[in-house]
Amino acid sequence: MIDNWRDALVDVAYLVTAVCFILGLRFLGNPTTARKGNQLAALGMAIAVVATLFSSDLEEGGSINWTNIGLILAAIVVGGAISSLMAKRVQMTAMPQMVAIFNGMGGATAALVSVAEFMHKEGIGRGEVTSIVLGAIIGSISLTGSIIAFLKLQEMISGRPITFPSQKMFNAGLGGLIAVLGVLIIWLQDGSTAKLLMWILFIAALALGASIVLPIGGADMPVVIAILNSLTGIAAALTGLVLSNMGMVIAGALVGASGGYLTLLMAKAMNRSVPSIIFGAFGGGPEGAAAGGGSTEERPYRSTSPDDVAISLAYAQNVIVVPGYGLAVAQAQHAVRELADLLEEKGVNVKYAIHPVAGRMPGHMNVLLAEANVPYDQLFDMDDINDEFSNTDVVLVIGANDVTNPAAKTDPTSPIYGMPILNVSDAKQIYVLKRSMKSGFAGIDNDLFYDPKTSMVFGDAKGVVTEMVGAVKQV
Image (cartoon, rainbow, N blue to C red; front, side, top):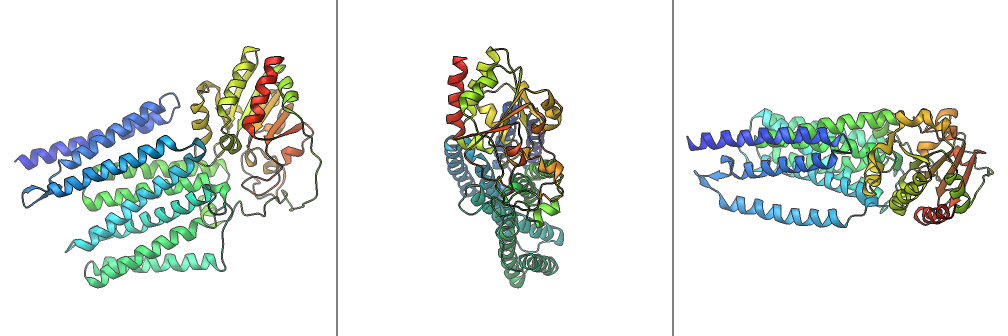
């Protein structure tokens, strides 16, 4: 009777956890309530952890297995300490890398738990074996895929596609091998042969995860992160089924569904299909290659000084700031906020245009600007602000490249042709802050840089914007 009541209370706790997760996701959809959403989701996870500690599954022989509980608590303390330290120390520019590596850890957990359950359980049913096999495959792919994404984002390996001869055939063969092994394991269900095959499947899935992400270019990395996030959620849900833990099933399903939906939104924002991202090599052009036919002929461009830009900004009526990864690298968000405040004091209307795939992870620019306390009502998505560029006096592009390239609209031979972009070229005057004329993630020239209305401002974005702040004060 006590066990029945306890299990019922655990189930109620998992239900409360699900409500917290669902509301947390809802609140995360709006910048003004995002902090509350994060806190609510964290509360839900805390409830789930406590409920799990009281679960009858942690009993052995009718009594509480204190050894297992002690190991769980120790893991929580160690993991919590490491993650807290990382979260406090990580720079905003490295946030995509942290998201990738944390996502990989989720995949690793799902895969290892699936393999461990298969190794020590006897007489497993085919339905449970199927969940174990799928959890091991998906979790392993998410683990090594996330590690490769981390290494690319951290620039420990090239961000451009890394390929080897017959790579697609290798991936197809590896995928076929994994499918055959999975079917054999499900058919065998148990025994030493099935366990050996499980280890082979685990290793093959790890190899496939790395091999799939290696040829994907940096321009597609925001979508890749969303895909891997979705895979980790699915793997967690499958592991929850294996462990009969409804909390894990619900959390994994929510992560998998939201990650999948985000993947579709990101792919749509790039006018690309998910299969073309996974199996293609967008962003793989040679560095510095020009848009379209790949001509490397030098094209004339204009450059100017921060002081001249400051004068144009101070006497403008409407200004739009377009942030990109260059702003994140330079950590210029606070200087940009200071510049915007000065312009507003002079009666200038300042807005920020956010492209869905700007930066290196979904929502990167929103998070960056929120750190500098930029008012949420000044942040506009691409679809909401694109029509306003034609009535804008000055656009200040800071580190954004491919998402402002007019070739996406005008050059059918360009690899980014058809990708929705910010209509920066419609503005009356454009200033682009960059360290050099180097191409972006897609490896192609940006036609915007050679527009007669565009002037380049070279240098570190934070230093350049700081100079602009000083100059605006003198106007």
